[in-house]
Length: 151
Image (cartoon, rainbow, N blue to C red; front, top):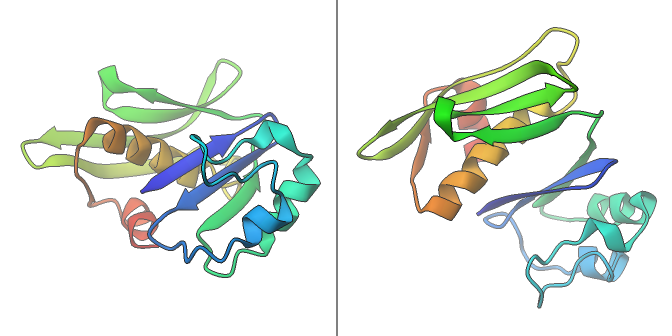
């Protein structure tokens, strides 16, 4: 399972398949990481510095973190994609094709000047979350999306 949690400053990614339940996140920021609650991550309960430090101690890499850079990522079901937006400007997209076997992500792209900020990963995670909520299988012919799926 892939989940993405955001606040005004940061984006936290969680890949449950990699989690070894070492609880370093819980010990490092117990107000943020609460395994008995849903959602189990609440970024509004602690300062960004504390959250970032707790995530940096994750031994498995199941939790990762990056800055938002003022970019919003939304799911656009009507166009079979997730899209990254800064203000009114589209700066990236992750596009999938539906079939009887599920969704195939075939393209992920971020505009020049916006690359290297983790936007592509956010785009893929947004599609993965939506697919998981809908009970849809996801594959990827896009090399970047395939890399994220294999993490």
